[in-house]
Length: 217
Image (cartoon, rainbow, N blue to C red; front, side):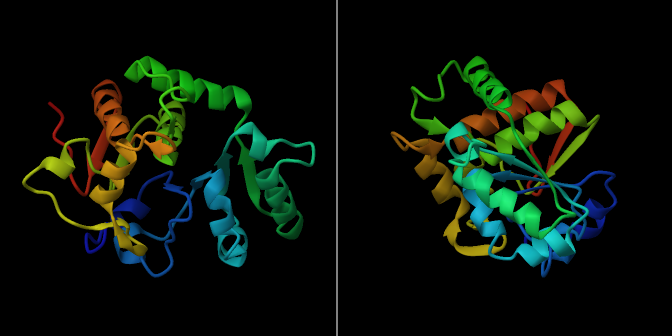
């Protein structure tokens, strides 16, 4: 997204989704300034809490949807991430924070197995925030325009560009991370596999990918 100057176009959307702790402040020319819904991994909640004034006060109109396994989201006092979120809402009473249910988490696992033929747990993989976000967006939106997501063949293409994994976090590179995770025997996201599924969904739903554009065969 860096240097694409897509911010104004993005801000014209009726509903703008962002993932994890991706900021707008300092990057508005490229990514826009508005955020309607922010889908956040349980592992990224501590990153939000590094700047709670920005995420939960300045952006108090944003709806937060937090996903994570039961062990971290349990509400009996033992859920580490749930406890963090509860304290956050106590400190920022206007924050709109929702957590996914165990049923929803299981559903997303079921979709992964249906689409790939692989059991997520047995294959030693973790679903990405992009996976949860796109499934939720397909349920909620008539049309979806995704910015800044590469397709499953991009890292092998002639147009491949070596860019940061996150536009706001220099140091790690996108394709390096994707290949590392895809081949990890345990604990990795299957980014490339997921993008292959996204390409399939884009033929069935009104989904467009930009920066870079996807060529759907």
